[in-house]
Image 1 (cartoon, rainbow, N blue to C red):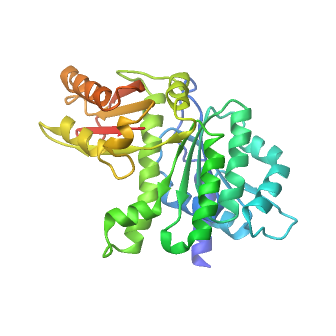
Image 2: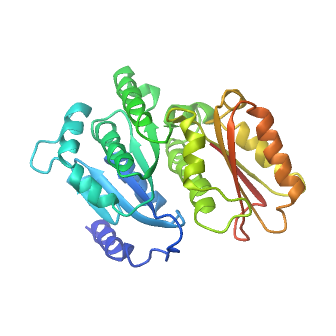
Image 3: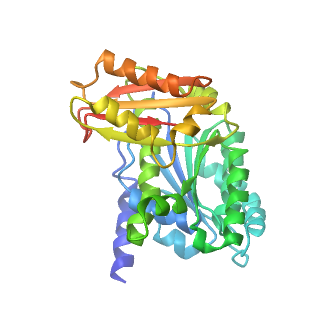
Amino acid sequence: PREDADISAIKETTSQIRRPIDSASPAIGLVAVGSAGCGMLNSLHGKLPFLNSTVAIDTSQLALYRALADQYVLIGAHADKPSDPNAARFLAKAAKREIQEAVAGLDIVFILSGMGGAAGTGISPIVADVTRATGILTVAAPVSPFSFEGDRRLQIARSGVNALSRRAEATVVLSNELYASSAGADELLNAVLEQAPASFEHLYRSIAMIFCQQSVIGIDQEDFRAAMSCGNGHAVFGYGSADGKKAVVAALEAAVSHVMLGQTALNRATGVYVAVEAKPDALKMASLSRILKTVGNYAPNALCFYGAIQNAGIEHDYHVSIL
């Protein structure tokens, strides 16, 4: 009961503590779908700059009640909870108007959903249908299962990811199995589960920080669409941070070799978006030129767009993100 009271109190103040957004900046929303997506809303609460609105969508009243969001959409309110993605998709189609109202006025939407179950897999492509139909730039971040969850769940997850990638400008899979493999067998489960929301936070920042404030090198939504359209919706993402005299090289190498990206994928890229965030006294012309030339060499056949900002408040000297 105490926990429920605390959640209710936070929900009542959520809309009051949102940071004022410059009206000239794009309005950004986060739509969390299914119990996994809605659950991650709580760990991301207060960590996403320039966020205008959060929406929680699920077939479960309990999952929605526990999620910290500005708006809630219950799918299939008068039906039995669906047990497979097709049933959830059918109910979501009937709720398109409610979904459209929840994302109205937004320019960019991030869709965060778990894959392999009924709600996240079935509903998130319908959300992407709605956002794309209304001209909203859509970035999807589906979370895929661990291998020990079984072949059937993995198959359902792959189907859901493919459905999302046909609708969103960029679909970046946050793979629990990939995080587990890179962490090793002795890593604690909680530490592995924290990787997906942490990766999503970096993905979000790489776009929001460039789009929503004055940049040294700017990029707009159409540039981003152009870069992402080269991949037919499929995207991979890497990021890295570093300090000191060799911060540029270290941050770039960390981003390129990130478990979600890798040099092989970058070599084969047809479109690339690079975001650079650096402290004002560290952002030098030679350093920036080195990043852009290096990425260009790694991805010689890609249409590349770059954004760079100065940020005195970041933890490290340099932060490089590559999508």
